[in-house]
Image 1: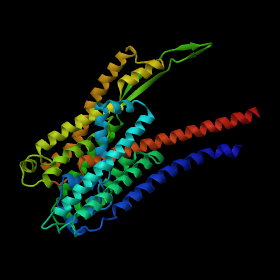
Image 2: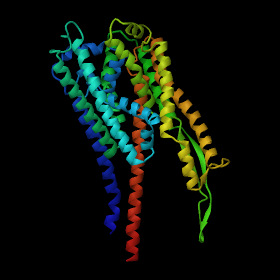
Image 3: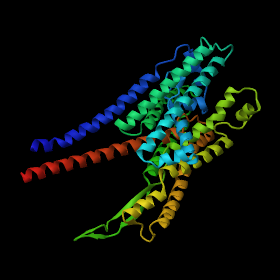
Image 4: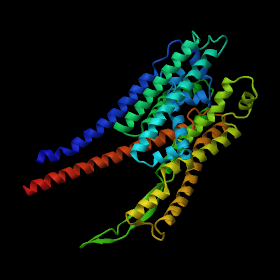
Amino acid sequence: MGQRISSLPEVTLNHLTKKILFTLGFLALYRVGVHVPIPGVNSEALAEFFRSQGANLFGMFNMFSGGALERFSIFALGVMPYISASIIVQLLTVIVPHLEALSKEGDAGRKKITQYTRYGTIVIALVQGFMIARGLAAAGSGGGNFVNDPSTTWAVLTAISLTAGTAFVMWLGEQITERGVGNGISLIIFCGIVAGLPKIIINTFTKFNSAEMELGQIAVLAVVIVLITAGVVFMEQGSRQVPIQYAKRQVGNRVYGGQTSHLPIRINTAGVIPPIFASSLLQIPVTMGQFVKGGAFASFVSSVLIPGGWLYNLIYLALIVFFSFFYTSIQFKPDDIAENLKKHGGFIPGIRPGARTSEFLGKIINRLTLSGALYLSAICLIPSIIADSFNVQFYFGGTSLLIIVGVALETFRQIDAHRQSLRYEAFMKSTTVRSRGGRR
């Protein structure tokens, strides 16, 4: 009996280790797929094209996919179709009554909405895959620069291959979320960005050795990266602790309740979702402007809507603020929290249960969301502004750092929570074993 009790912590530790190894194994599988190219593409010409790209749609997609788009592998689209489908489904959840009803049905409704998101991902991946294939086939003189055989058959097969790759990446992310640690989709984006770090460091030192960059510029980059990392860590850990008091109630000879606890509300409830959504939507006109040549729209995009320009930054800021409030309204619902507190005899000191509690929580979350949205905007925009001011090419933008630090913090937070829960389960099992042994 004693051996069984002493082995419980080791069993729980092995369980957590298996989940971590499962996550790392699936991420390694994703990195292997990044290097599986689609036949019929001139990889050298495509690599040269991406080396000339900056902060536009192709550069952002290539960064998020970990270089898969540059290699035009089966994972070239990455998780961007899934993110786009998630945006559309979440917007429709607010508009369509059927989807709104499904969102309130618990796990069954969420599974149905997830299924709709998967269908939308496949459709978007097919459209994007075919558009990219046709764009590559039509690029250059006679279509011979990027594609060896720019036919419609090749474009259709390429679209199907890219869609299959996106579906597999989506499956990998869901498996990591269910059987591993952390959010699978976020970790895949994290993995893609981190995979580009060695190349960024090598390019920076290459420019320094060739006298294209000075030591002072590298120092500015290092200071900006350190400050952004420290700011992200500080803000992501910050929260508002709302005091909760539970009323005393007597059942027979026992008195229940009377405890005091806190309801933590994070400053950045939306996490890294708003910058990702904003970047995805903002790059749509940039993409259309690159594919549609010689029109008024293309002229407007190329002359006004320039990444890093004032109009681009202004729209980017507005989209981040919008998605911060939108995503927070989906994740945090004051009416439901107030109703649950009322059912369990909880209340905020000085605030009446019910509608007044909902209004009070709504005011708090609105203020915190505004602060979080401004913080996200500053993190995403300040690095590019500093880079332009000091004439430095900031390869590793604020959005990338925000995603890396935010996902890393969230993953370690989930690992710690899982470790604590396993210890609690082990303690409860050992207590049960001892009590049974005592009765015997």
